[in-house]
Structure formats: structure tokens, C-alpha cells
Length: 112
Image (cartoon, rainbow, N blue to C red; front, side, top):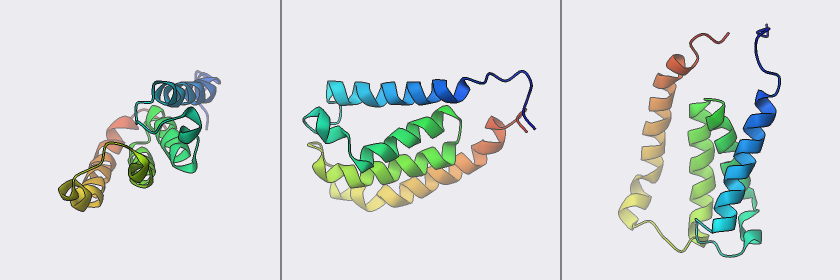
């Protein structure tokens, strides 16, 4: 059941904030991908939905979406991970996702 006091525009606000953050990253070339058109790919779409999930306090899905998006985006980035970090990337993602599962009940208190 929906809370009568909830703001009906929260979803739109989360979408606009997510889109704005991704556009700032693209305009400032923070990932060193090059042109703005290089940012509008399916990998960035995953990262966009990761930001959207993070704003909704969906920690597990945001971790997974960020991890997949960055994993496939990394070969095109000028800054590369060292082989040591590449070896521990997915185990570290699993640890962070596990931590997000543990934190999840704390973020969902008061929500039904």
C-alpha cells in the first residue's frame, strides 16, 4: 500500500538527478573516454541505472550495475587497473554486494 504522505514526484526527481550526474561526468570527461558521444553507450546506461538505484537506496542493485558497467567500460578508459586489482575486482564486488545486503534492512526501516 502506498503511503499517503509520499511525494509523487520522487521517481522523476531521482531520474533527473541521475541523468544530470551522468551528463556532468560526460561533459567534464571525468572517465577520460574522449568525446561526449563515447559516453552514451550501453555500459553508461548500466551506470546510469546504478546511480538511479543508489538514489532509491537500492544498494545491492546499484553495486551490481556499477560493477558490470565499469568492468565493460574499463578497456576504453585511459586509466587502467593494475593486474592485481583486475584479479580481485569481482571478489571485491561480491564482498561489497554482501555488505549491501547486510545494510539493506537499515535503509528500509519505516518503508513497507
